[in-house]
Image (cartoon, rainbow, N blue to C red; front, top):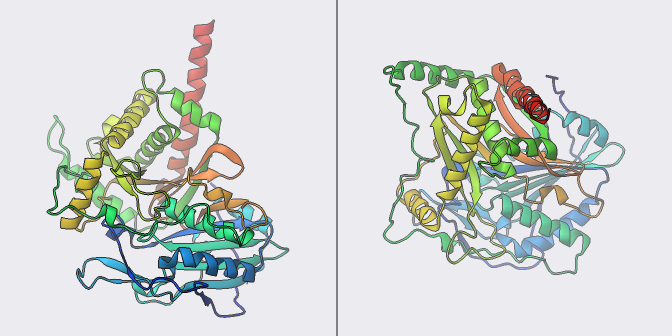
Length: 462
């Protein structure tokens, strides 16, 4: 496992600018739904793009000013609701997005090599706003870092309370579109109103919502082993205080197809379902918890088309909920890889099937009565970025040669492979003590099972 090296410091010739909408925008208050205003979403989604050729900064500012007319809430500011101190809303005051320009003594090729294993030094690629809390940070912060020998790194921070992954991709594509075709209308007009996801009156909670409830301590027929589980969880919490190591692993289409074939013909599955099950299993194996411990996999599911009426085209707010697969360590991790990955895939499919319109409405009502966070005590959280079109962002000088998150210390992210359709890059941070084991189970174990499968096939053929 190679060590990642720090990148050089950025230097700024000028203070950041506030880019305002080019023309007057509505001065109103944007209501945030309970899916928007969840406590675990009160952070910014930070994207990093590397380009071989740079784009004129003034051109980028000009097109940003134009797109903020359409996406005017991103030029506003978050504030606490006067009607409910526990909720946030957006003051659409047109104060603008923060835009910083920097320079770094580093080439695009050097950064591309460094991107094989991201590290915390990448944070310097996004201007650090001096703020007391989240409300003092503009919902949209951008930094363009010009590189030695040409090329640029574009970093964006978009507050998750305003947009989900689909919404951020929609906004960034709109910005890129106006950079190259300034006089053209947007291909997708943004839909701002969030009242389609307002809670029912009175709220009606019809499901238990395990994605938010605490993981129950399991017992076995051999006796009560809650003490062992409690001790392990305590040790796990202590280990999480050690430095986290980012792991980046690529899976090409043939490797993903191999994972899917392990479930066929008894169970057909998608690429996400197969890779999610494999990643969840590898994560649990590397942590080595007690076999009777209950564990969860939480993953984002787009529900725009599950509701009646469907959320309108152009809806860029949070239109996703968390699917929750739950089992015990023993059921997910066992001697038989084939049956275990089959079990994991089936759990993911069942968790997706539960997400009916009534379930989503019940979740919104649940969040109205209980402002809770998801249970992360023994949960792997996967966010799917691989099918959002993020890798196609072109500001006029070509598509990026690398894209990914600026940092990944909380969730596991499935990223697109730049230049390889249907490939997926898995990025996750794990405690340093288990990093090598996690890579082993993700790579070598799958390779070994593939070899065994080929041997079995060969024997049958002979």
